[in-house]
Amino acid sequence: MIEDMNLLSNGLTLQADLCIIGAGAAGILIAREFLGTNRKIVLLESGGIRSEITARHLHEGEVHDRSFRGLQNGRSRGFGGTTTLWGGQCIPLDPIDFEERPWVPSSGWPISANKLGPYYARAKRALEITNADADRSAWEQFGLDPILYDQATLRPIHGVFIKRPDLGRRFHKEFSNAQHIHVLLHANVTQLRTNGYGTRIETAEIRSLDGKVGIVHAGLFVLCTGGIENARMLLLSNEINPSGLGNGRDLVGRYFQDHPCGRCATIETDRPKVLQIIIICFTAGQRAIFLKSR
Ligand SMILES: Cc1cc2nc3c(=O)[nH]c(=O)nc-3n(C[C@H](O)[C@H](O)[C@H](O)COP(=O)(O)OP(=O)(O)OC[C@H]3O[C@@H](n4cnc5c(N)ncnc54)[C@H](O)[C@@H]3O)c2cc1C
Image (cartoon, rainbow, N blue to C red; front, side):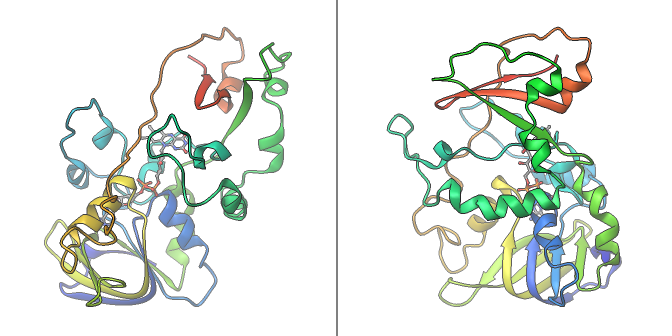
C-alpha cells in the first residue's frame, strides 16, 4: 500500500516490525525482501511518488573548502530516490577498497569484500543482473580485439548497466499491491528517539512539509536516506548523547568521498549504443581508467 501523509489525519501513529527510512536504492531493495511475508514493514519517504522541487529544498546546504555540486545535483527526493537520476551501472567493490593502504589515510574497513558476496548475489537477483551480463567480455560486445596493455599492472573491469534503472517506477506496482508493506510518502523523519541508554531506536518522528506530524514505533529501524542524510539524522538525534546517535567515536559524517572524473581517451565508433551499454574500466592499484563514450 502506498499512502500520502499529507492526505491522512494529523497525529498519525504507526506500528511496525521494521521501519525503513528512505525509499531509494537501498530502502526499496531491502523492503522488497519482505514482499510476501507477514512482517509489518513501514517504508517512509520524504518526497512524493516523483521528485518534487519543494522536497528538493531540503537538500540545501553549504560545502566549505571544497568544490562540490552534488548536494542538489547528485541527489533526488521521491519514491526511487537517486535511482531516478542514476545511470544504473553496477560494479562490485574491489577487495582493495576494504584494505588498509598506508598511502591512504584512515583506510581499511572492519569487513572484507568476501563478507559482501552473499548480499551481492541477492542484489544481482533483485536487479536481474545475470552472470552472462557480468562475465561476457566487453571486447566481445564491442566486436573488438582486446587492446594491448600491461597485464601486470592493469586489469579490465566490466560494468553492467541494469535495465529499467528507476527503481521507483520499476517496483511501484509491487508496493501498491503489497499487503504488509506500508509506503508513506511526504513523511520526513526529523528525529529518532531511543531508549534511555541511547542504545536502541524506539520511535521515529515524522513531519510533512504541509505541517502534518506523526510517529512510527518499530522493533527495528534501517536508515536508507543516503550517505549525507543518514549522518545528518544521526547527528540531529542528540537527545541522549549530545554528539548524536551512534557517534561515540566522533566518526559520523566524516570521510565523505566523491568520484573524481577526468577525460583520458576518445573512442571513435559507428556503434555508440554498445559503448553506452558497457563501459570498460581499467584499474591499477587505486587508480581507475574508464573508457567511456562521448
Ligand atoms: C547522475 C547520477 C548518476 C549516478 N550513476 C550511478 C551509477 O551508474 N551506478 C551507481 O552505482 N551509482 C550511481 N549514482 C549514485 C547512486 O544513485 C546512489 O549511490 C544511490 O542511489 C544511493 O542509494 P541510497 O538508497 O543510499 O540513497 P538514495 O537513492 O538517494 O535514496 C535516499 C532516499 O531517502 C529519502 N530521504 C532523505 N532524507 C529523508 C528523511 N529525513 N526522511 C525520509 N526519507 C528521506 C530521499 O528522498 C530518497 O528517496 C549516480 C548518481 C547520480 C546523481
